[in-house]
Amino acid sequence: MSSTPTRCIALTGELDASIRTRVASGQFARARAGVRAARHRTIEREATILGGRPAPSRITGEPAP
Image 1 (cartoon, one colour):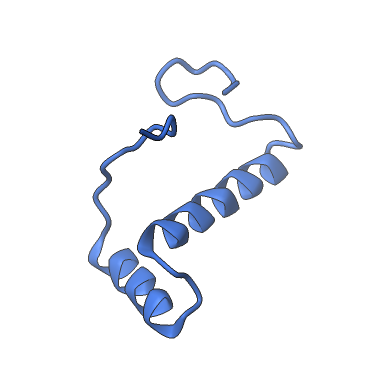
Image 2 (image 1 turned 180 degrees about the vertical axis):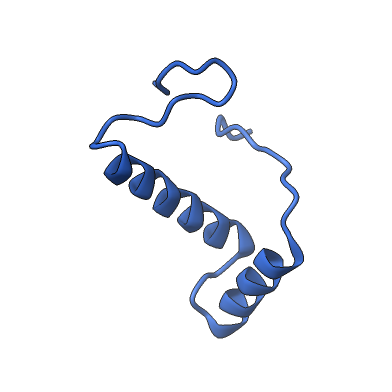
């Protein structure tokens, strides 16, 4: 079994359609690769906005590890 944690997430219709389109075009092999790429872009954007600091946790308010 993989040691990678898994999460079930709900996507808006627009986000789901975007990922499906990108998978169909061959940009991503699977939907999870598209979701992962989007999350990485979000992390990079947050780091840029915050000057390289990790984004604070929305639960605790502390910086993410």
